[in-house]
Image (cartoon, rainbow, N blue to C red; front, side, top):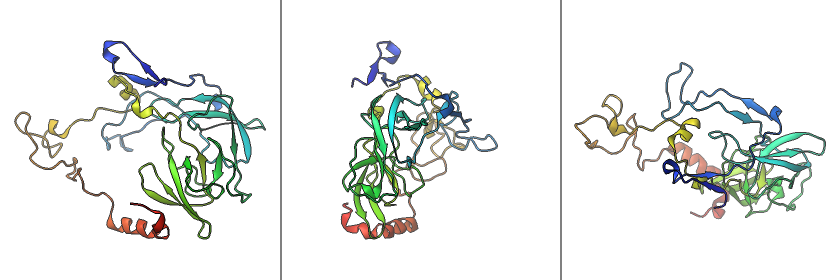
Amino acid sequence: MQDLNTFLKISTRHCLLIKSPSAKIIQRKLLYFKKSMAGRNCSGRITVYHKGGGEKKLRRFVDLNRDIYSSLFVLNIERCPIGTRTCFLALVSYPFGVLSYILAPDGMKKGDFSFNYSDAKKKRNVMLQAGFSAPIFSMRPGLTIFDVSTSKFSGGKFARAAGTSCVLRFIDYQRNAALIQLPSKRFYKIAIDSRATYGRASNIYHKRQVLGTAGRNRRAGIRPTVRGVAMNPVDHPHGGGEGKRASGRPSVSPWGVLTKGKPTISKKRKQLEIKKLSIFKQYIRN
């Protein structure tokens, strides 16, 4: 727990915050501003509750493809503003002078080296270290990977949040398909020419931090979540009544949809997923 800050003030005595690896911004040309419209539609009306507000943030251009066959030198490890990205970023330099941001794996430090393998050379079982990027057909089953793409040029889609990772279960070279297990333990089929990064996403203690005050949530763009029983009957099915009275019905959303135990996936989509994973049936364990 050396990566967490502790506070002795009464208002924040239970607060635990992640220590920022570096607050210095080296390359401002890799930053951009995006106006936040969270929780509202084009008319300005609230469509999603407990979202909106927050402070203005400068976001980073992050290379999620990493398809340039080259070595990388880590110049700095940085942390994104609160409410944008939980994983740490590594500012890397290519040998020909180009700077870029990539997702930093757990254990990467300033001054380390990384490498991007090419998908043109159909090599299998290449040498991998934490932070090395390679196509799926160059890896072996059983590896822990993150920043996983679904196709060749799609960019990383899965396991990009802090401390997350996927497991490569099986590679079928004849059908050009691979089976991965997502952080939710769900299985997913991807192409073998898609790319992934070996290791685990950084900032593994993110889930242990305690913000301590409501102001940090508000700066991140998270508004208070109001309970249904505290509303009026016109606003929520649980609202109304004299005093703290129970709703008298199972928990539902503001639109009357059951929230406890009812599956949200349609039968048609579930059958399509089962059909897609049928070729890996012997490798999926329930």
